[in-house]
Structure formats: structure tokens, C-alpha cells
Length: 453
Ligand code: PHE
Image (cartoon, rainbow, N blue to C red):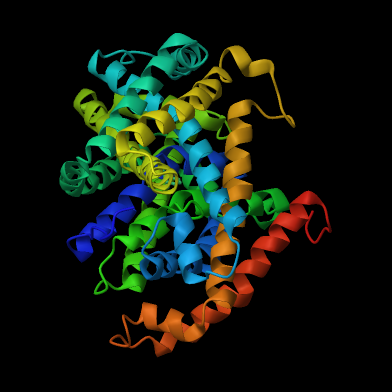
């Protein structure tokens, strides 16, 4: 184990790294399709509620554990509470990370295919119907999705192994603002399409009758997924954070960026969905069948498409790096492997599971587990179950195992910041609101009792 931990050079570097992990396919690919599968507007309300009531306290808690523990996601808990046996809980987040990376790279591979198609002008002049057909043909085929997925794995593993993250960070600083700008332009284009207002209604006219137990569970899962919580990523990154950075402002900035981007993605996608008569509940393909149509309608669409899919791949890359990084650093430190051995073996193991996820969209489409494809099952299990469970564990740890004085000391940077105004609220959220809410939502889902339809 390294004796002195490297630290992020500046406050901005922390925000950039955490935001790089949080902002990714979760915002642009997953948020719109989960929203579409769950009836629209009401989902956004519940989602934002989950972000504020559960996501924020949870993120802060992971930061407290990581920066105080100064170890990897698993060992930080052990350091802070040597007498407890946290093994199981320390391991759940890593299992979640392992599985998420497997199916995340399926979609990350799709972004590379779309980048390639944009370059060769593969979908210009196609009607909305043909764009959809082309997507189905691609996602149902066996070889090219796996090929792109493996390319994505290679790039991720290379960066994690060679430690060239600094370069990536440097580019991200330019690329992420550019992405936002591009999304705003595309959202404006989408809003000016014929019939676009239906999309806005769908997003922002809350229909409370659509709120079901399932919608709440999905919104919570999506909030956790999008913020990258419950996987030890924030714990690991926080352990590289300097004692001078402010935890709460870092968390606030990341949450704001992540949420604004997700909603912006919604504004970019849904008006076009209705305008081109695409089903809002088309599932994981939604963004991929919608975007090419927008580009086809835009002046300069050819160039915009290339830049957009390039940026989307990079956004996905900063997320996959963070997931592989925690897994590799854990394996390396706990099993005392070399970095290269840890990277190679972890990547191969995840890639095998990843290929199965990709195949479940083509050859394995008929095989269903609990009515879901293997891909959906992996996603459902991690986002909706493992992340909330691991998240609850972190808040309970901070709320009940750590001493409140220590938590306060960590959040106030050793008493140098005034945090009295919100510390009690935070402690209340961590002790009561967050754990009880998550447990109720999960218990309701298993049918232990039913407070919701
Ligand atoms: N939050 C990332 C996204 O929105 C995905 C992710 C999940 C990254 C979990 C790390 C951990 O794309």
C-alpha cells in the first residue's frame, strides 16, 4: 500500500474529477430513457427530491469517510472503526462497480459506433423510421457492438494503467463546457421542431397519477447512479482530496452540474421524440434513435454530430475511468498485486461479464430473468438495489458509528469553517431521513408492506 497518498492539486481538480465521474451516459443516455419508461414529468419531481433528500447527504457522507479514512473504499471504513467487521458492506460497493462497468461499456461502445457513423455520414438522408431500423440492426448484431465495447475497455484500461488521467482532466476542462454549449444549441433546435411543445408538456406538466412505487424506486436508483454514489468512488476520490477543500461546496457544485445536465438532456431529447413520432418508452436506444434525426435537421449537422458523439464518448470515458480506478486500486491494495496485474485481470474479468451484457441485446434477447434481459437485470440490480444499500450503509456509518464531533471536524476542516447553520440538518438527514426513506422504498418493493400501489 502506498504510504503517502497523492492529493489533488486544487479545489477545481477535485470538482473536475468528481464531476467527470458523475456526468456521463447516466445524464444523457439513461436519464431520458428511464424518464420515458416511467411516465415523464412526475419522474423528474421525484428524481429531484431524491437528489436533495438522499443524494446530497449521501455524497457528503462518502466524502467524510474517504477524506477522514484516507484509504480505499473498503479500508477507509475499517480505519475509522477498527473494532467492527465491515467486510460485507465494504465489498458491496465494489461488486456494484464491477457490474456497472460491465454494462456501461455496452452503451459506451454504442457511442463509438455513432461517432464512426457520423464521420462516414452513415445516417444522413435517412427518415426517422430508417434511423430506428438502422439502430436496431446495429444493436441486434453480434460482432460490432462487442468490438466497440472492447475498444472502449482498452482505452479505459490503458488510461487507468498508465495514469494519464491528468491529460484527460486537462481536456475535460475544455470539453465539458463545450458539451453543455452543444447541448443547449441542440435543445434549441429540438424545441423549434414541429410538435415540440408536446415534449415540454411531457417533461414539465406533472401528472401525479403517474407516481407509483416503481417510479419512486427507479427515480432513486437513477439519482444514485447519476451521482456515482454507493460505489466507493467518492470515498476513493475524497481520500485524494486536500484538507483545505470544502466538502459541501464540492458536493453542491457537482450535484448542480449533474442535475442541470440531465434535465438539459431531457429538453434536448423529448421535443424531438414527439416531433419525430418516436415512442418515449423505447428503452436504452432512445437517445440513439433521436439524436441522428436532430442532426439531420440542423445546419452543420454533420460537424455537430461528430463533435457531439466525440464529447459523449469522452464523458463516458471519464466515468468508466473512475469505476475501473476504484476497482483496480482496491484489488491492488488489498491483494497486494502490482498495478499492471490488477488492471489486466480486473479488466478481463469485467470484459467477460460486459460481453454477456452486450450479447443479451442480440443473441440472448429471448432469455429473460424476472422478465428482464440480462442487461436490464444487471442495471436494475445495481442501480435500484446495490447502490441504495451501499449508500445507506455509508450514511448509517457516518450517522451512528462515527462520533458527531469527528464528522463535524471533518466537514468544517478542523473547525475553520462555520457550518453550524446546516450541520444539524445534515446530521438529521443522515441519521433518520435518508436511511428510513431508502429502507421504506426497498421494503415496499419487495412487498414486505405496501404503502404505495
Ligand atoms: N454517474 C455516471 C454517469 O452518470 C455513471 C457512473 C455510475 C459512474 C457509477 C461511476 C459510478 O454516467
